[in-house]
Length: 238
Image (cartoon, rainbow, N blue to C red; front, side):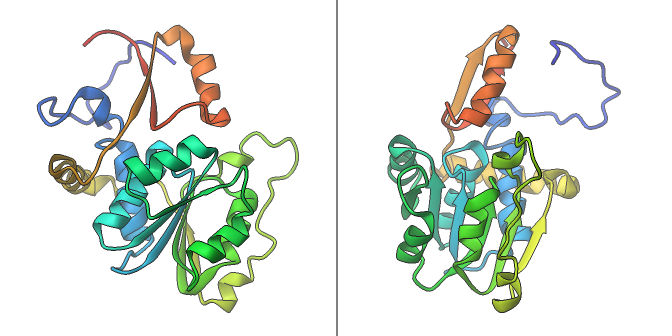
């Protein structure tokens, strides 16, 4: 982590501060928003009427995924940890339903909220949550692998889905991606996200911590879930 860097201009994006406050350009209008946009619409091949389930739904990417799903006329079900986060994604982000993986049986809850199966599962966590989603797929489902935060710090071999044969049974597909795969289309995503934000159909929350010296403790918040929305460190005043 550093306060300053040198660049020849490559891989640097100019932002319009009149379009949104600068932190939002690191959130809904930045890589976070583009990850949700391309992951859901391109990799997930979203169609109107789809049932979309997203893990880590109260996080920066997950909350945008659910909102885009609703904008596109789909049902959005979010999986999050704790009553506060579940309330947040339903009451403040417009999800149709929330599942608290800390207190609920995820498989049973998915059966309740997705009686006809999951058309698009947007995965940010991996592990047993991914397995639960694979057990509830609709025919032709698309699984978008964005991340696997539950597995990043395991001390043994990562836990993969033991029920991967569900992909065969349901003629489903599972694909991983990075937002940078679509870098040539960044402007398209930014314009779409900005238009939705202006119309009020897309909202974001930024959890800002002040001071570069807080980096170690702030980074840990990603793994403990002790934040809502996009986690950002403020290095200095604008």
